[in-house]
Amino acid sequence: MKKVKITVMRITTYEDLMEKYENPIEHACHMKVGQTFIANGWTKPEGFCDSAWDTVSPFVMTLAHGGENFYDGWMKNPKSAMISCNDGFRPVSFLLETMEED
Image (tube, rainbow, N blue to C red):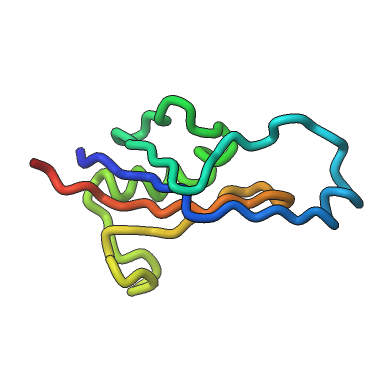
């Protein structure tokens, strides 16, 4: 099974939606742009958000098992995917890339 590198590419916040619909919460997201994680198959990397893992894990698993070319050519690199977490108030975009074995 291949390892998959997960890189935090962008963090967006929708203050207007948060103000209108969200109950105040502290520390909703600990991710930082540029932060990287290495996934080894189905195991969630240490420190990775549980909710985000629920969203990205099917793509990580596919890449880890040699799958590629999601949605018939969606990504320039067929061994990658750009996936966002499911937080509608502060979505985080992750670049998933299959790591080449040494």
